[in-house]
Image (cartoon, rainbow, N blue to C red; front, side):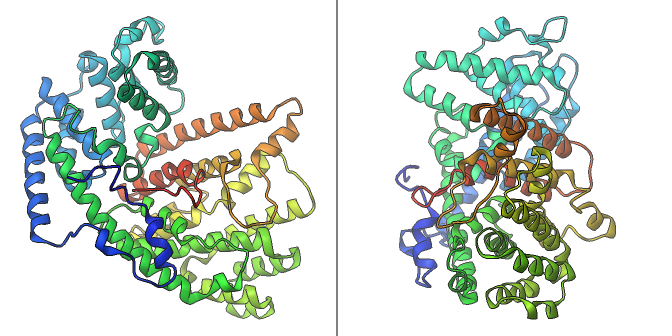
Amino acid sequence: MPSSTADTWCISKDLNLVCKNQSPNFSRQPKITTSEHYLKQSHNMAIVRQELKATNKVAGIDTYQSLIIIDALQRLGIDYHFKDEIEQVLERLYMAISPCFFNKNLCFASLCFRLLRQQHYHVHADAFDKFMNKEKKLVRKLLSGESTEALMSLYEASQLRIEDEDVLDEAEFFSCQLLNERIKFLNHHEAHAVRNTIAHPHHRSLAGFTKNHYIKDVIRGKARCGKALQELAYLDRAFMQAIYTRELSEFSRWWNALRLADELKYARNQPLKWFTWSMAMLTDPSLSEERIELTKAISFIYVIDDIFDVYGTIDDLTLFTEAVNRWDIAASEHLPDYMKKCFRTLHEITNEIGYKWARLCTAFLEEAKWFASRHLPEADEYLKNGIASSGVHVALVHMFFLIGDGSTKELVESVKFDRCLISYNVAAILRLWDDLGSAKDENQDGKDGSYVACYMKEHKEATIENAREHVSKLISETWKCLNKECLSPNQYSKRFIKGSLNLARMVPLMYSYNESEPPTL
């Protein structure tokens, strides 16, 4: 069995070859089409299924064991193999909930609460009544006697909170405080696990980018089928690596054939970065074509952003925005040559949803006017426009149609940006993270503003630390709103909701991205 560190796959290693129309070194990729692979996969899947079936009881320790297995499957990113079994366990568990159901212990209550909410079951926060006083406040003294594992589980559960759930705000604060106090008394492995939980809670992280840290821990964990889970994870990783490498190669051939990078010398040329967004949003192996098509749309969000930020004069940018708003190919005749090629290619690819691009370009133009005139708007005005200029609504509407969700007029209407609060909140998270100043885009001389700068202009007494703290709180509050929208009854498919959440989860990783240390799988 290969080690998780020695066999970490970094997509940039193949990117340098792929982007030069050379063949990646597939010899280092594990062979996945052999009968041995499928036999191993089938054998291990049978073991896990049998364990889930055996532990699917309404009460008793076996219920906790089934939750541990489900948690491991999700953290390893292999839960898609067991959708029906997981739904069966969690539905039965949800139907069995009673007032005293969560009174067993903090580990069980926290894990059960989190898994049910992740599956869109609206479990009430009174699951933690055992640790509250008469005023419905969490009691730190009661929590301080809990194990480190229980506190980590509580911290993870608190990430599923929505607005006005004060008890879960307290749960996050107290569990984080107690865990940080204990770190110095833990061994190296335990301390690392605590730090990783605080920095990357599961609900706000992507399994595909964190599972390498988790694979080797499965055997140490409490899941009785740990060895089968570990081997399944290795097999699945090999399978997905080959798929992603093939998709990246296909997209790069398309991108190189456009020759836009030759035309726009100072624009970002980052096929890896663009593809990584799609890879995060659409995780199902069967959605190969959809990932490639979504990457094409995302590449143009970046290219057009750079045209507005680096290249164009206000007059040229106004012409470009008017052309996109009219969505008339004839309008491109008045554009400079470097814009003409970009607009015509864009028109061919996305004619059906041109109005989304119009909204994006209008927001870009508004920003360009602000910064050309050296005008800093009020923070709220900046954020409202910045949410539109994030490009999130364009990416999500492309995904919406690519996965086949636009089957009725009502569904198509529901995905409009001013109606889709899921899209709105994801866009706010991206914009605020971007404006924390951690994004580093290479080889650009354009000027950009930020929410931080606008906030400090309004609040003269605020330091940069105050402003960044304010932005961090806004991100946390926006996550609550996003959680609420995903938990509330709506007409969106689970695949669309998962893709939207994954986009939000990807944001911190992408905005600490750099070419020397890209995301790894």
